Image (cartoon, rainbow, N blue to C red):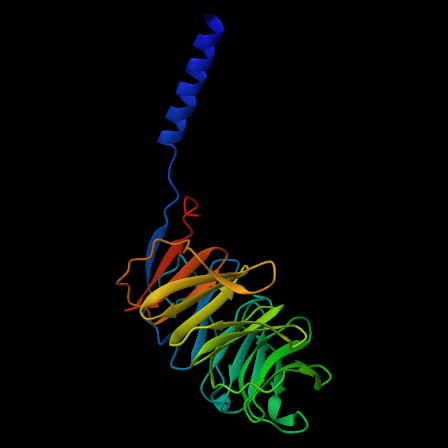
Length: 273
């Protein structure tokens, strides 16, 4: 009887403590009036653009005061930013065919003129592909390339991609080319590993083995099977159906949606399958 009472009291106090413990919020909202929202790094710093200047500041700070910045008028419009490595941030300027690598204080550490690569070709997209390597989409030949930017040497290129590439997202192991009709997945040998037939994708991002796309005003998620094919999975975030989306960013299980001068941060709901 005494043992039963002890077990009962232990269960009661455990249930009470669990009920009283604070719940981790799955949604917060931050004001951010900017021209472009680029994303968030591993240290919860926001990256955004105003008048072609890229800024970096802690997420909890609500002004540009003290924000780090980078700008060079000679480079033209900033096309894209790759934040996969917060110690080596990649800026791509398509108009001048230039890649700039920044350190964690947004100081320039290296400038790469893609026009100097031989033979000359025009690149539409660029991102980091690991140490000394870049993913580059060759618009002239319609190929995905991996290039050693230290030796200015082509490592490998894909077969010709017939469809027009509208979006481009990657990590060090995979590159996703979003076309008008499908998602094409390439590995670090520039070999196509998967194709997902989906038309009308407006936005896409990939992180932690999960691809998230914005299609038909809906958020959709995909993951690799054991055969490295993309399959549809349930969304991990409680995103309202009528949410407005101008851009989004996926990082460490959190989805950052930017629209109407604010960033909505959705944390993955662990109760979802």
